[in-house]
Image (cartoon, rainbow, N blue to C red):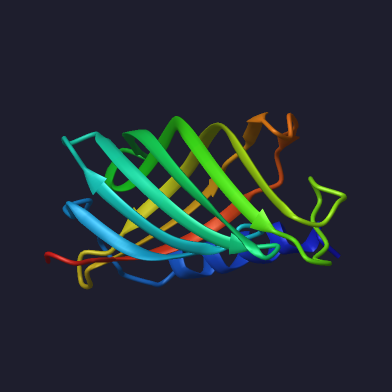
Length: 165
């Protein structure tokens, strides 16, 4: 059943992009929104130049939280300013107090923390008629401290609202 989730997210993303007659451009500077996926949470993206952005993601899962900071490089895709391909990397910190919660990294109860590095690659579409952007990405993570493992199933759909448009 877990393998169906990325397919459903991709179908939703393609349906949103298929809205007829919608023209768009990436003209937002700061967007905040919700990221759906295995590590669902809140996202804030700030462009620091025309093609470079910083993204912060807060996720809550398994009786704990994960904070992620990413640096992203954007490029026009399909010869369109409204459709962007982006990639980048960053780091994450997570903390859990399990108390009988099922967690894929830690088998024992108690408090656990981890720190690691992240990668990200995705596509983003920005609507001109509304201050909204939609992105679909893959964000693998490598935990370096406390649980040293590779986590690669984080495929997410993010919808952001431009707070300054």
